[in-house]
Length: 219
Length: 219
DNA sequence: ATTATTATTTAGATTTACCTAAATATTATT
DNA sequence: AATAATATTTAGGTAAATCTAAATAATAAT
Ligand SMILES: [Mn+2]
Ligand SMILES: [Mn+2]
Ligand SMILES: [Mn+2]
Ligand SMILES: [Mn+2]
Image (cartoon, rainbow over all chains, first blue to last red; front, top):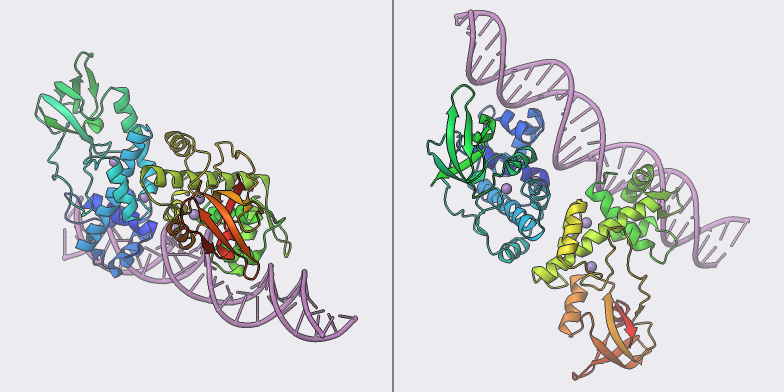
């Protein structure tokens, strides 16, 4: 199956939006891909033709097993390149997503597998997301909670769900990165902000928008 | 100046074909890019509009200074990725051109410069071609002769002008790679074939097509 | 059950990068 | 210089991936 860059971007976004939801909506996909619903409908017809998605008018979109397989390969390439950029070229985590968005479209199994090997077959990317192996298998389903929902008092940052430079730069400025351990001091019901504290540093407060995007596990 | 992948491929090919020649012909460019002359004419108009080439109907094509600057950046990226693939991912020299043909289109100065640094700022690529620096400067103009034309008896292989897997695989099979030193035993006028010998190995004969593409310097 | 709102699809264009076939220009050959 | 051969351009189309505006369907609110 030979996919265009555009088709690959659609497949990857569908894969991302499918998580949790039982099907992906035309509008949601348009928003995710920064395009218009009419364009999504056009592409949906094409991807259905190629048997990568299940799609019926007004019924939403789902990946077929083939589509999912394709998506996992793209995700694999994306995350491996992110690792490469961070670990080998000293990029910071907020810079790599954009670049990986392009590098992921170089389709060569040999390149992908050699790159993985070169990086020591990493299992997670710089944002804490798991990297599918050559067969498309990902370690564990990662049953992480967002800091926003977690009830625990002592936590470790395991991943970040929003990959925008804006959020990642903010987190870096506040000293929050993967593996950072923190204590929840207080939760304010009024605006759902949370006061947290990192080891010897003074406590500070983060908004709900931020805490929603920090994935943690209790320690 | 924001160039499409297609525009970049044209610019790079024009740069390549301009070497020696005083201008690039529509047909030559079509052949190089595996497309049709009519398509070249279309693109020529567009690139002229963008001031990357000088072009007048029936007069051939030349890069403007801007066009040349753009070309050198693309060539830089192409050759750096080739180095990466060979030196870090253990690809062989006949496999890397195709992959670099795609990787070269990821436009990020930061990425390019970090990659160069990571590789130790290499000056030549796996085919012996010089790598432009961040400013587009290339070491020396490389005044190499082809084995076909050279008069010397004892030579060192400095570069290969044809990057097809077919030639590169042949050379590898014969034990010829960059830096290989060889003696010319005999030149046969009939078909311009050349009998050569590599150190302790038995002599063998190569055709004119092959010797034309091996760039050497006398030692 | 209507009506309003929101979501989705269709119709019809546009842009980019190609193509083929035909026309025209340039260059080479008698 | 006239003709033949070759090179280049133009005219007119196609396919992919977008878009806007209008039509239709689904859902929510009265
Ligand atoms: Mn992408
Ligand atoms: Mn990531
Ligand atoms: Mn290319
Ligand atoms: Mn090369």
